[in-house]
Length: 313
Ligand SMILES: [Ca+2]
Ligand SMILES: [Ca+2]
Ligand SMILES: [Ca+2]
Image (cartoon, rainbow, N blue to C red; front, side, top):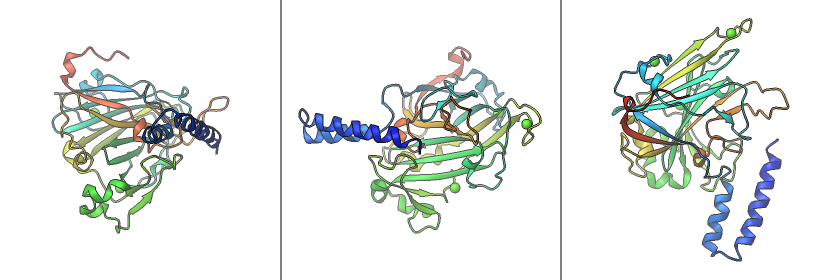
């Protein structure tokens, strides 16, 4: 509800800009300008990150004490998803890769670590969670995990690209599957690309994950330090994301993917903080994770980790 004001104002500004632009732009240019104005995050300022290739082993156990994680550059501290303002607890992520796998590590400061949901594909955002979105051109993948290590995955396809993209050939993505449903965003219902088709049946092939809790889980009598998440997504499982634009798997040197990193909390920092409970590496300026145009650019380098200076955070 708090979003209605800013969003309405933004729409008004967009309409006004569109009307003004009509005097100087062709109809096609005007349409483009209006469409761009609907994307709530400015193109400038979206984080860019270099993911280095790792040669060393990474044990997927939730503990980010592997030598590669100690050396990998870490993201900036997550900010509020909507306001881009500071957040009360520190959250950072790092990305590594090798010929077989994309690795993601996440550090979440948390003074009272909690988790209740235990079944795969429970609605994990009802716990405090960490989330990752990996975007292809015509589809994107959503991943959520809580401090118990319970995960939730959904595969979304832009509806206008569904029929021509070969997605209907995949049984768990077929429109008549009982776990395939239409989806039209959360706070941004007028995304320029329109609606999506989501499959809650889809599981990332070969995914592995781990969580490590530095503190006591579901015990509020003490103060915890935080939890870490360690994820491994095999490139071989990304065929459906990569097919639309034919991107290389694994990536080639310099390839940039759009990957989003966020966390959602069941508590809010007390006012005057403008805490929405959703924090992200790249702010979306709207209560909606499903805006790939706002995802950070993760640029893959074939340079090895050993060629860069140790973590400079
Ligand atoms: Ca590890
Ligand atoms: Ca699923
Ligand atoms: Ca505790």
